[in-house]
Image 1 (spheres, rainbow, N blue to C red):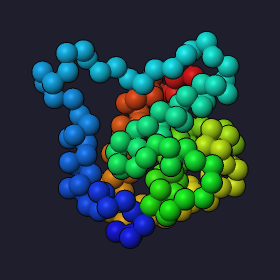
Image 2: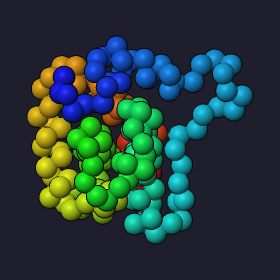
Image 3: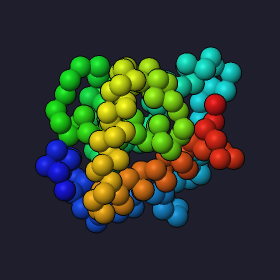
Image 4: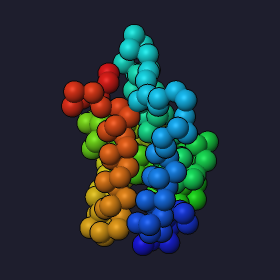
Length: 152
């Protein structure tokens, strides 16, 4: 796998370990975990930011990367940029947000989102990376999808 990928996620085993750590265990939580929620009455742009912020939080926990670094509007180290690109890709492909919407929410240009989507799609040719992406997509779908659509 690419050396620009965070150390924790170098293998499918590492990805599975992270999923197991994120998955609630029987008796571990007293209150059942609910899907990520946001203000249904908020304006569309605010809901868009809330959804993408939730995606960033999921990626931050999954890849053990600082959420502050992922939200930064400046350039950063390659591993952090790669996780941000994964977030943009997932928001566009899995949540069916337009590239312009994703760009606004991530503080990037639409063309940057386009570049990220093409880059991640090319990386998915590697089986191990594709498995990790499928896992992330499933987590995001579970958190944000209702009746086949994003909770907007």
